[in-house]
Amino acid sequence: MSFGSNLGWTLLFAALAAVANLIGGVVLIRQRRQDRPFLEVVLSIGAGFMLAAALLAMLPESLAEVDRARWGTVLLTFLAGYLLVQISEHTLVRHFHFGEETHHEEMLGPRVHLAALAGLGVHTLFDGASIGAGFRFSQSLGILIFLAVALHKLPEGFTMASISLASGRSPKAALGAVTILAAATLIGAFGAGVIPGELAPYALAASAGVTLYVAASDLIPEVNASAGVRCSILVFVGVALFWATRELLGLAGIGH
Ligand SMILES: [Zn+2]
Ligand SMILES: [Zn+2]
Image (cartoon, rainbow, N blue to C red; front, side, top):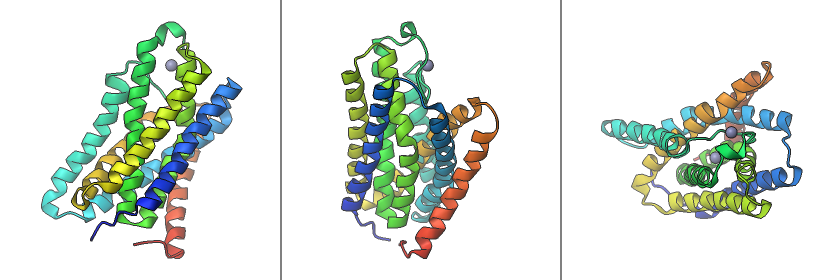
């Protein structure tokens, strides 16, 4: 397989995802309160969709494009992607969780704000890289990954703006922080779009690890923290939505 760059598609879809970050941030800054039911629905469906995208599309596609002898390296890259988010969001950062920041200012000093921004910055860099790496393989994979990313971009912008305000920053600074996340998404997409083709399977595997982390370790705990089983059921809806979208893309002839 030769890896085309598809840079136009990559940048278009990455820009759409980045805009969702900004919208999430602006909604939070404007409302100054959470629209919890809506966010829970988006988070839950997003978690299921991302889980399926990481395990049924991104990882298998990256393995399919390398010799069997290199599978160990690809899987190590996958694990490294997963652990990179553990480091950036939860090791260097002592306080981070998805959704609205409801904790007190004492807990969220300036250092926490900066650390959360850096942690989410690494994560969003890979949101973009996922889209860029996907389009190196096929249009359908690029679109599927874009949807997986887009589904959690609103809550992500919301989360960042929320941390900014809760740590005493001005609305303008909060918008600045969200803009940095949006820019990181674009930079990641561009980077994955222009790396040498032989690195594309590894970029996709690392992105799959990041996607798995965001789905299973960032979003699922939020789903489980919500009352009732509705959100939990929506995770399965997210998986089904992924499957249906992939079938539809195949029927529409958008593939390799
Ligand atoms: Zn908190
Ligand atoms: Zn993200």
